[in-house]
Length: 79
Image (cartoon, rainbow, N blue to C red; front, top):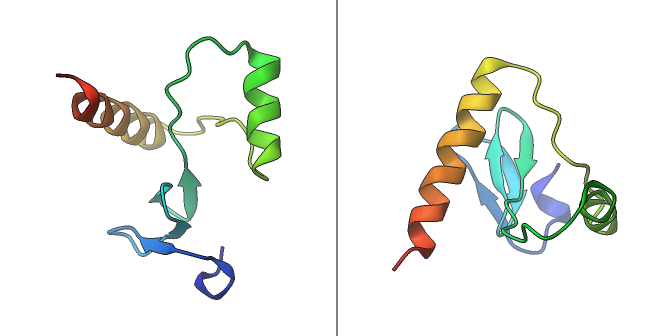
């Protein structure tokens, strides 16, 4: 993903450039959505509508990043 084609780019600590609201990690951009009512097909369709794909976790490091990020983002929404 190149910053010159993004409307509001953000850079992660490792230099990954993503659209605002997305989180970069090792060259990939992740978006965390908190709608737990979606089934697999609807979640996949929502991703596709944003030119994205549902995550496929390919390594333990990626799993840890996703788990840690999800936990820290949940804390932001708790009263």
